[in-house]
View 1 (cartoon, one colour):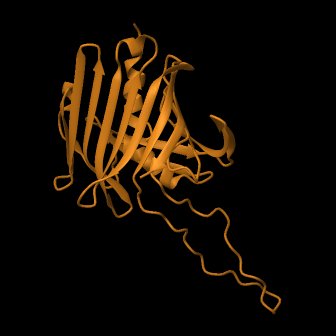
View 2 (cartoon, rainbow, N blue to C red):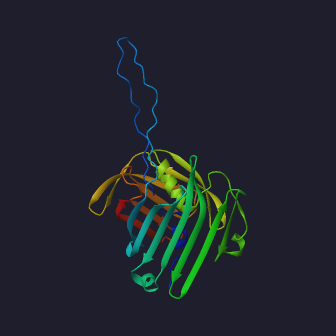
View 3 (cartoon, rainbow, N blue to C red):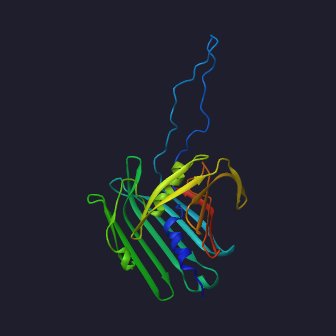
Length: 266
């Protein structure tokens, strides 16, 4: 059975995440009405208000190579001491992967440090048939080092040096939703699963129509670029607090897709 493990690992590393209720920057600058004289005066620039993080539950349908695979849930949970947790859970219920009981879970606990979503701890659980693999990571900002334990490759068990702004895969997706504006290029540093790498995303200049269930959305397409043969694309809508669609393609041409079914803020 070819379960394309690399594609599933990539899914947990960078999806959704994928997703938090944020306001978007205004697209058009406002101009003051003409003064009685022959010149006009523009008012001072006003920053668009940004909403704070708000807990939510979201549900997705999951497709593998265009065929139904299972379900996914995404949650943002408010914790004590001004901390948050974002959870992603993908469960295969169809096909061979459903028969194998494939179940993937990932969580990141974080706080907000200035302009950054700052990861504090991260956990990943992968289950299938009679196997279970677990890994946990701790981001120690006092030492500026992160370390993973559990089912982690030997080459990834040492300290990973941290820089300001470093994020886990799930937090990068929150940042994409926060930062995406037409034509923007977004730069982040991914630190997850015992490794670190730079990631770049490019936002389309125009919105495109995406049909999800019976609804049509004017969505911004966001593509991860310079990622080799692996392709990740998200579609985001300013009135929806998480991506409405996520598509990943691996180097063998296989695809994994999540389509938003419903969500609620709690």
